[in-house]
Length: 219
Image 1: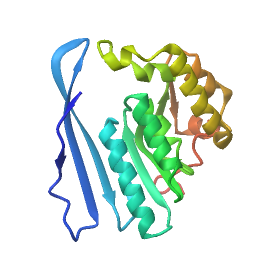
Image 2 (image 1 turned 90 degrees about the vertical axis):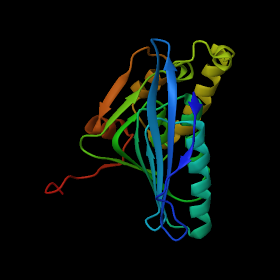
Image 3 (image 1 turned 30 degrees about the horizontal axis):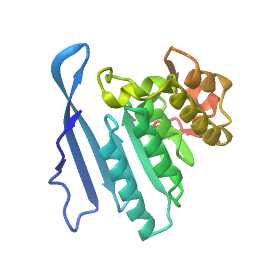
């Protein structure tokens, strides 16, 4: 995809709010017209919050990694990463996962609305993981995240099935001891050709979520 980057006017030298908006256009194999989408990264340093909204991209990996390092330099207090994303390429999902897992701070992830595909991989990086009663998750075989909309990409054409399989096994080896999730999840990530959608309650049962945040009047 072709991307242009624009820093929001919200950011000021003395402001605790940092906002980074990334408008971009993508072309789909099924649609010759350019489709316009937006990604938004937002950080509230006073609250130690990061917000990952929209599709994942390489620029998102860069800015999240930088902001986590800056927050770690300020204090050892936990950081909360709020997520509402349909996902993206597996490279970005793994990159964000590694950025959070290598951070010395306790990082809490919260699914605001949806954490789908590669964004679900990002969500699982949290030391503590939360969602709301109507949050949704979607998982599928990780190999699919390498080829979405990239049938003509030279890079995509060089990715072999063996490489994808090895990368998936490495990630599962690292994440599996932390999750104690249903075996169905691991089969979905490695074998299934179908998408697996989960609501909040089922995600809790699978061991993906530590707690469902209560709505008003239900606590």
